[in-house]
Length: 235
Image (cartoon, rainbow, N blue to C red; front, side, top):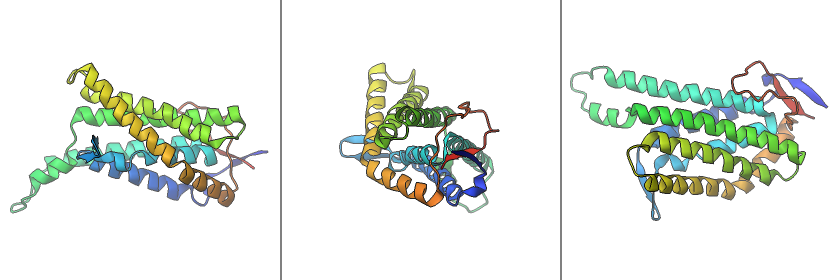
């Protein structure tokens, strides 16, 4: 039986949404450092950003697509605000005697092209992930959770990685290198999700028990710009 439930009905949804947004913001702050992991040169964001897709799986599986849509938009606007305030603060003249303007600009200064690429890729990738998760749950009638946690990541990360690399480096580096960058980033992110599958299983199982929720989006409006739908859960 499907019941209409207010957001306040859930004990942990707001805390999870807050954690999702915080992880997203921290990922954007550390993304500018290029780290060497084994033989791979990757952005510092690889340490945290893939976790946002695990959050997307949890939101969609337990609370439904509407909860995931709400979290994605909060993350999108939170990231945009970070970029905006960072740019304004950098533009303000530093106080006399404050020597860290250059370092501050390095950390909080975002190149407009990278900014736009990151926001568009995040938005498109997260919605692709959640939509795939919700549809696969209906197709499997809630069975074989691993098929949708991994399947949704395969789709979502393909969209995210392809968009962010092409919008950031398209026209700057050769297509062969673009392809290598996409493949490397994509495989690392999908591998991250596969390794995290037992953790994802545990969190989802615990939340379903704690919240008494198991959403099936049979009547959901999957329009990402629709905000009128209430959260649904399957008892």
